[in-house]
Image (cartoon, rainbow, N blue to C red):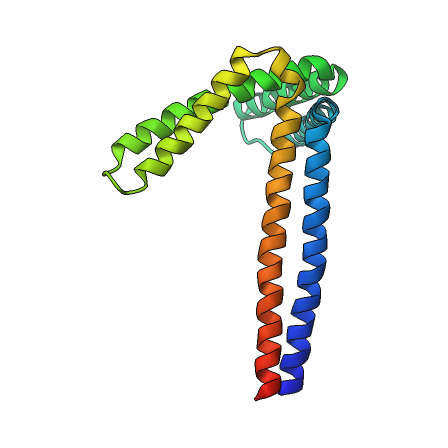
Length: 193
């Protein structure tokens, strides 16, 4: 039983090691995206556009299973809207980047306002401070993006996606290192027993 537990802890430790490597790679890709935000924005916009095209085609196929003509045409209309929007993003990336940047700015402003309303609806001390901090941050970012638009389009999407990947990579490294350490401690404990 000790041998199987030992081999299990070694397996966990080894997998955690690979997860740490993946975290380093993810963070490095994120840094690259931050360093080259314009290219990241354009590529992300094209990718998002093609995803919308695929979703639109799927929606069109899904429309065929509608039970009423009204549902069929509504689903078909949504599918066509996805395809047209997706093609616009994929074929005209600069325009797509500009449009997505404005949408991100407005989304952040709206998020900040809603979080502030939610914060004031909470009792004092029930996380209100963190919600207000998040609301202020979202609102400030949104206003900054919109105030500097269209120039902000060059850096917004790439920087935000890059920051998300850096955060994801660092989190993966931290969690995997903790799992690896605990697996090694369990192995030492079982070996000593």
